[in-house]
Amino acid sequence: MAKKPDLDDYRVPYFDGKKFKPFNLASVDTAAKPFSLGTKDQDRVRLSELNAALDQLQEKLHAQRSQRVLLILQGMDTSGKDGTIRGVFHDVDPLGLRIVPFKAPSEREAAHDFLWRVHSQVPAAGEFAIFNRSQYEDVLVPRVLKQIDQEECERRYRQIREFEAMLAENGTTIVKCFLHISKDEQRARLQARIDNPEKHWKFDPSDLEARKLWDDYRQAYQDALGATSTQIAPWFVIPADSKTHRNVMVAELMARTLQGLKLEYPPAKESLKGIKVE
Amino acid sequence: MAKKPDLDDYRVPYFDGKKFKPFNLASVDTAAKPFSLGTKDQDRVRLSELNAALDQLQEKLHAQRSQRVLLILQGMDTSGKDGTIRGVFHDVDPLGLRIVPFKAPSEREAAHDFLWRVHSQVPAAGEFAIFNRSQYEDVLVPRVLKQIDQEECERRYRQIREFEAMLAENGTTIVKCFLHISKDEQRARLQARIDNPEKHWKFDPSDLEARKLWDDYRQAYQDALGATSTQIAPWFVIPADSKTHRNVMVAELMARTLQGLKLEYPPAKESLKGIKVE
Image 1 (cartoon, one colour):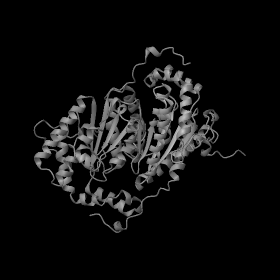
Image 2 (cartoon, chains in turn orange, yellow; image 1 turned 90 degrees about the horizontal axis):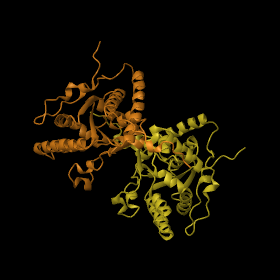
Image 3 (spheres, rainbow over the protein chains, first blue to last red; image 1 turned 30 degrees about the vertical axis):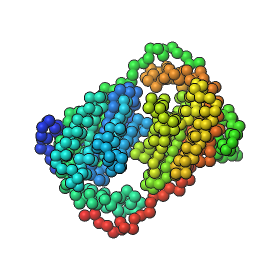
Image 4 (cartoon, each protein chain N blue to C red; image 1 turned 90 degrees about the vertical axis):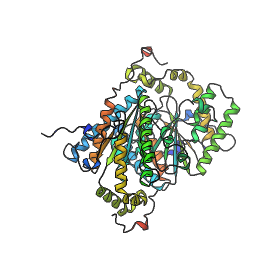
């Protein structure tokens, strides 16, 4: 019988404080479906169960109002960041979820350190926030476009590690997912947007430019993941050629993470006992 | 045959620029269900249809990226603001919805004019934002607690009208809903929270204090609604003793509002024709 898949098999080895361990994105098959139960229908049923479980867990997180949860989603263009948010958190109370998309920095944002706009959006007590792109854009894009050198890039890795450690020490649980698709899958998804005029609004011609730099972006991701996967803010590589599998796996990961927080409704208030509202 | 219910029958008469028309909240029955199709099951089916329609409409709003939509929800404690957001917008892509709760102002917020914190949260092009409480708190609470006099209150009504007009002139569609419950219904809902220890975290003892001032709050609402219902930012009174009916009615209103915007996907880009992704 096959070994039950373990989420930790998809965790990027922790940065050891000096040099990151050799980590090769190619070791994870983008088309793998380790968390599939078999058929797509079975996976959809499982996803529904997880959708509902996440709803319950989030309500407790909110009720308890002490812990903070942050999910960071990164991935190449078309890797499915938007689809993951919708597919995984569909049943979570929209009041309990804060989704923060980070685009190219505005002039005002660019006039600050790269963590400034990110810090202002981190989750408060009882909040569940999802970053759709994040501080990691600033060790990917400028590196590939050669706007920063290796030294600056390493400095930013360290700044990110220290920033995330500070958040964790102050009660934030951080999970980071890299949505891992193949170059072929990206071609198919971009082509589908081009071929369907109703999807043209989703198509950004600069995606074709970025695609030409696929290998550079991939290397930049591999290095960044290796240098910033830590015990308090681990990176997980999610095989994401299959959308259904991707959603199941991220949902499993987040359900496990929230279950690990031992969330409980706050204790009943004795002072309310017997009160009759007039 | 009964007249088909018309949403405009529940619109607060527009402020005429000088003195607001006599408007009496008591003229709307909190237990009415004008938009019910008959049974609760039928209403749930209708609500599902509207949930899906709102999802489609929001996607077009987002794709078109030109118009902005703002829904303001107000109502007494327990009137169902949270439940409305969840019940009506359950199927809308969480990416497309920004929910902004306004609580008692922080020290920093209170150090600014009362519109400052609100302005920073208004929807951008393509966004659908929901204010869970809003600038209206500042013509309700301080008035009831006698922290501002009638003159200041009238000044704020005007400032709100002018602020909302500015937003509308700059492309924002504003709809405001007052969730209208009876004092008895509030008693039942507060009592339910007290009687269920798992719901104690939702119970705020200050709600009982506010309940003692029910008549004052009701008068403050009535005056504020009358003074700030305008063509570009109308108030609707939603009979809200029935949660299902409340959701159906707000969903009908928002679907009608979005349909009225004639949202369309942006035209296909000719430049993309025939492109093959490498």
